[in-house]
Image 1 (tube, rainbow, N blue to C red):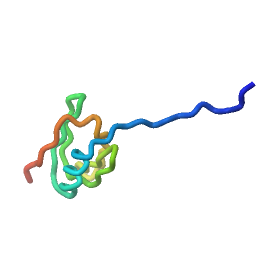
Image 2: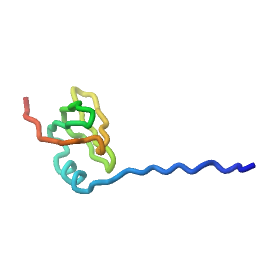
Image 3: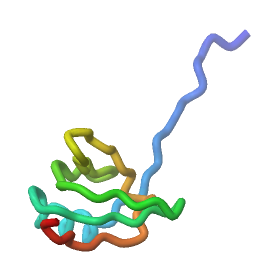
Length: 77
């Protein structure tokens, strides 16, 4: 009988250009189009290698970078 647990490995692609671009606009308002056709608008609070945090009306949304189709600066409306 084998008592070893199977190993689990997390694999995620890292796009340094997207990461650097997003990191340069932390604190600004953005619009994010996601792969499921939803849109998130708000203030970019944090950028990590695998996700971003966009705050909308005081609620943080954690968005996987792999799910982002495009990002644009948002107007201040």
